[in-house]
Amino acid sequence: MLDNHTLSLIMPCRNEEGHLASLINAVPAFYDEIILVCNASTDGTYRLARSLESGTPRLRTIRDDRTINGIGYGFAHMTGIDAASGDIIVCADSDGTYPIDDVPRILDDMTRRNLAFVSCSRYPADNIPWKLQLGVRTLNAEILMLYGLRLHDSLSGMWVFHRSVVPSLHLTEGDWNLSPQIKLNAYRYLGRRFGEVRIRQRVRSGSSKQRYLVTGLRHLIWIAKNRFTPQV
Image (cartoon, rainbow, N blue to C red):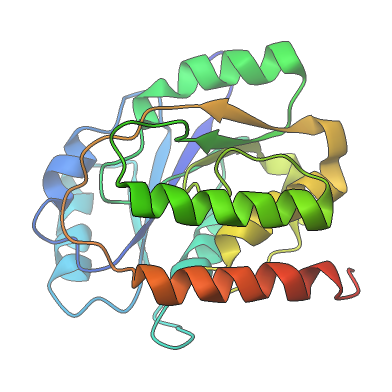
């Protein structure tokens, strides 16, 4: 618990066996529950996660192996969010790159700015390859042009939000496109209660599951199509 809030940490997880135990051990004590959603792992990630539950009462492991073109990132997040019981939900990748220990500062910023949903921006950054930065900047420009929303990091994988806003997010994308969708829907339905908070990305553990060029092109197409798709 933190400042009278209960916190749920949601982490999608695929083939993270090599560093999973150290990742779980490093989760700060203020998180009331840790929900690992194992998605289409081919190593011992799910088995290890279940074994860690006995020594970590706040850890809960869920399996969701749904995928679209082999990617189930969005499905894992949606499953974890549905299962969360905390009144504050923190979503972060399970590769150790996102500063989940920085949430007290983020919550203070949310309170000060009266925000219900924040996306944690890694940019501007000096520790991320320029090709990835260029890709994100291209998507940021597309979102500004089509939606009128100025983002610094359209593909951030760390979000902090009040559980009460979940029905307003209308999440449907089962693959990587959940990342832009959750931000665009939060902006569409929450307006000024949506914002960004600056963070610093850390060195990742394990290997990336992304094919950056293919993923980037799919994001580019999805963002454009979504702009002209009737919304619920």
